[in-house]
Length: 196
Image 1 (tube, helix red, strand yellow):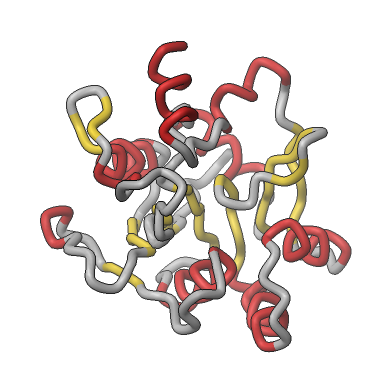
Image 2 (cartoon, helix red, strand yellow):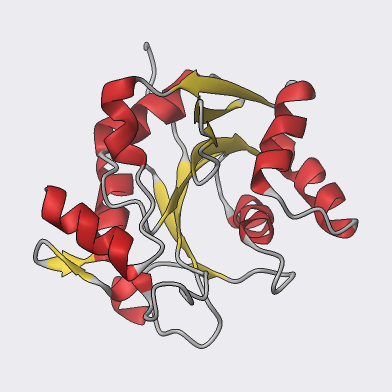
């Protein structure tokens, strides 16, 4: 690639973590907090700006980054995507769920570069990975349209975006699947730690 791509990035730490029983963002992991690891991965992937999509009432001040809150509470990650795209400085934004501890800067870089001016969402036979993906500001009207009618599914959002030519998809190779593991429950977290 001839020129450096300038892009924003955001870690999504706004979920309630009810299935985990504790805030996933602040789980200790390899000498740092899980949110610190994800922020570092986004920075190492080359993000020119890093934001936090966070929960109201949680103190993220130690990270020294802009915290963006959902404009529509209780509407799931889609509300976070809309809020982050509005807040982001650059045309393209790389988003990353806080609960994907297997992700690497190299995988994130691959995602952000695959879509050119469009977004890019990894996919395999289990479905889309909409919270380890890159989105263009062009997709914001679709997010707001779906939020307005109560359609909050991220899978539906990506499917509709793909049909409208707003995102490309990136096939997840078999050996890359471990990078996309979600840890939603204590058992998921224990399994991930034990398999490392």
